[in-house]
Figure 1: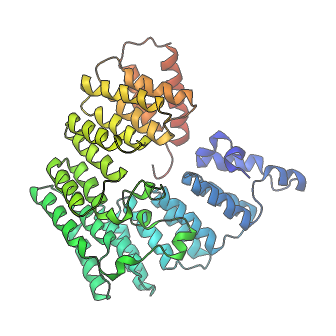
Figure 2: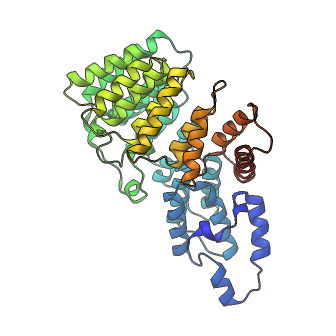
Length: 444
């Protein structure tokens, strides 16, 4: 029932996929032959396929699976649509999310409050605040009662575009509904000020102020993931677009009590405010907490973004002197050292790539793509680091992302390399294949 093995490579483009269906699925076909070539035949099996694709983060195939269901005459149920919309949320595919919402309505299944929460969260991931507001208005028209989760989803969706006035309007609505603020609300407020333009000196001061205010969390702070979110494997961090979402299931990686600090440090790293980061690090210690991996990663990011290589390397070495390093820490160090593409920074990046592999850490597709994309931006020098990252990925048969391959390919072409160079030919071929498969897809 492995859909990925069943589909040809051209399935990545929906138009071609439908053409293939027409050819490979005639309406009149032998029953045994049909069962052999089909990967699902009822709603339960389709739900299993959908769940598998979501777990693999292959959300771009969900529309194709849904098309198959329609061609097979399989009627989706409410759980099917919830899974499809969760998958589009995880993949930040807003257009697909609303397609499934409309299909659901057309089949007489009105969205419930949990589904609206997923849709609003998707709006936040795609920085579409206006659409989130329209969903709120739709909920009111259809008398869908808002839950505490709904308010927090809205708050964080509006925060993604820096709309502090609307964020505070949501806070007032929460207060009027008898709800207090929890750590995810303060996280949203911090994100809103980070994204608000123009950035001023008051931005970081406001972040510090919000961190202090967050220490008085209200009683709703003790709320946990709802039953539906647990069933759908959606953490609160993922639902509210908190930057720690991808690490929340990693044991020992983050301290969930420090969510507000995580968001504040992430914001300061983006804002390149070294002074604010150091203030927050001191506050964490005064509050009696130890740094977790995510905190160290954000401090490193900030130092490297400020081109303070020494401080970035120092906090990495101090943390790993008493605790085992993680692959993410190494990747943060390597990627950060390449900021500015200084000779010393590129040397540090190269050395730590070698140390990382010597310690048994390997790059996954995301890490490898991030490092290749960063290394490919080097305009001078021998392109040693980019070539090394590419070779490491090829040794494990990992295909980087389209943006990473494109940047690397263009970087190679800018150098004095013969047109028939094996590396250039291989990268060019992979770029053409990835561009054919993903370059023109929806929501990209």
